[in-house]
Amino acid sequence: MLQIKPFKHKAASIHWENMFTRSMFSTPDMLAQGKILNEVAGLIDEGKIKTTVGEHFGAVTAKNLTRAHAIMEAGTAKGKIVLKASVHSHCSVMRAGGD
Image 1 (cartoon, rainbow, N blue to C red):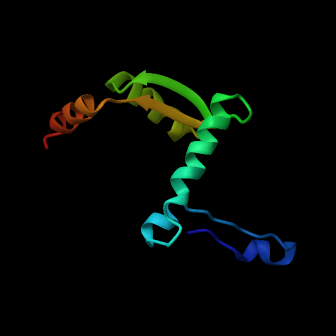
Image 2 (cartoon, rainbow, N blue to C red; image 1 turned 180 degrees about the horizontal axis):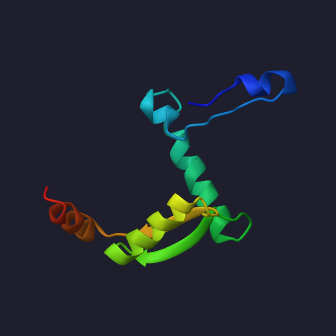
């Protein structure tokens, strides 16, 4: 749990944003989220903004999962760590886990 008390005398503010708020609460402007995401994707494709991807380890494999987990555990990750999985490989991972 985040301890807020140390921030009280520093006039700091904490902000949290959930990108799925519109869909979670079925807001009247829920469809606007898709338009926003498409616009952001276009800006990324044009090189006008950068993503927070720090590492891309390729396919979901035991080796890559172990590598990504080690970086997260060490607290040395910078940006997002991406592992690519197709629907079929995801199903295989689920079955391998005993499901």
